[in-house]
Length: 222
Length: 309
Image 1 (tube, chains in turn purple, yellow):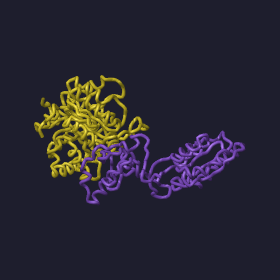
Image 2 (cartoon, each protein chain N blue to C red):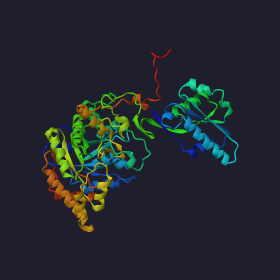
Image 3 (cartoon, chains in turn brown, orange):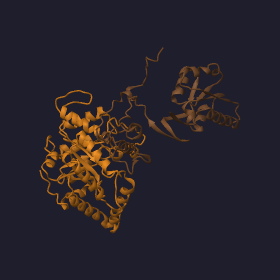
Image 4 (cartoon, each protein chain N blue to C red):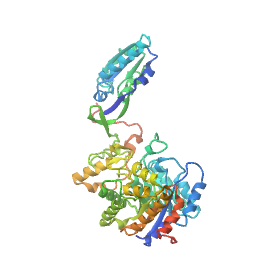
């Protein structure tokens, strides 16, 4: 799932401090799971902003709402009748949701309230880590189910590099060396021959290098 | 191993004599005289000179420009190339450029992460990794083709090298497997990470030898003399992928400060003598970091002077 973290309150305050009516729009999707931008976080942020305006002696209105998903038009449409009442919206959705909201309500000021970080997993509550970089061509079958593009700091397809130490990455001893993990997994699976076979240069055109991406599934389109 | 390129380094290794290479680090300014000076310090004592490519991710004069300078001075350069900063278009372009100046040795590296350097906010490229760079040079040299498919006439005649680090452990067999992967990609020589832990190095060479890798790849043993106990401790604690056993730190630290540099040189010479006996070691790569002036002394005292050719 997409992982995000709330932006620091000061940053959000700086964005909205000159407005009188602000809507905080949460999203019930990924950002709710990682507790960065769901209804609960929308309420917390709205309360903090209200407190700020009160302390400043300003009469401002801050409301909150949360949509099922901000990456789908039908849910964004639920705001159609409400947005005229606000000067600006702070969206707590991921970057996709913020942009889709702005696309749909192009006359309205839409600001992001979270920093969208990566595609990852919940290791524990409050502990998320990256697993996928959405390169568009999955190679997990060859790498023991561990992605070197997401898990190696140098996205090497023929790792590990010479900088790993005691099974940890050279950039941070807290990060496991992705290639050590791959080696051990392939060993367990009896597939070490895969480790020694050079992997050819990757076609990155299915990744962001190919420009903004689009999926057209003719089989699904009506 | 028969020489197939005009590389003097390749010819020397093929002749069965120990090869001696060293390296020079380019300056962090446009001062070309620095490379000339460093080249002059070592030129009669080594067979080829590596020029590092923005080592430790610190921005410096580019390796290619320095290699050309050394070549014009009559030295034999080894072009180090990391895949961190350039994509396959730029890498291949630089390989063609180097070859157009008669540079016949290349060292294919992935490169340190930019996190360590003076531009930690930079993007990293890593379009290819070291193994894929080896494949690329081989494709260009042996098939006269670019990765994109373009066929060309005048091919780069490169003796292809890479790095090997037996110490980025703890898994020594995995490190040998990586060497095997580089061999499969087409590497012809490797220069190892600085050796301080002899036991691990010998274990690495034993496993490699049992697999016949020493027949396919010439291993040049990496030697870095310690200047003082501070450097020994720094290398032990701070430099990724380097294994400095405590007894090395104790040995350098066990002599008075003014004698520590000499003790470091003694150690390096002893290491070379010991490594000459290790099966598969075909030469030495002396990385005297900002201490190039000591290379002649080490080469002489290790019985590697005069150089052939």
